Amino acid sequence: MNIPNFTIGDKNREAFCLLIKALPVGKLYTAKVVEKESHRSNEQNSLYWELVTGLANQLGYSKDEMHQLLGYKFLRYEKDGHDFIKSTTKLTTKEFSEYFEKCQAWAAEMGFILDGI
Image (cartoon, rainbow, N blue to C red; front, side):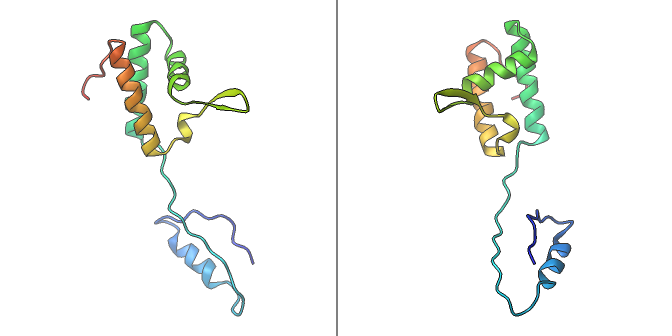
C-alpha cells in the first residue's frame, strides 16, 4: 500500500493518522515528513503590488510592465545560455521578502518611496 503525497495540516491530521494506522502490520515502510515552505503572504502581495503600481505610474509603465521589469532585474537567472525569470509566485516567504527589499531599494533610487513603510 502506497500513500500518495499528502500535505498535513490542522484540518486533516487525524485523517493522516488513520492512513498510517491502516497500513498492514508486518511490513516495513519508509516515511519522510518535511515542513512545507510557505509562499508570500497576502500582506506581502498587497504591499508588493502597491509598490509596483506606484513605481509604474511614476516611471510611465503599466503595472504589468513594471512587474516584469522588476522580475528581470532581480529574479533573472541563466541556464544553458538562456535567461529565465523566476516567478514571484514560486518564491518562499523569505525569498519574497528579500526580493521585495531589493525592489524597494531600487524604487527609492528612482525617487519612489512607498508610504507607510
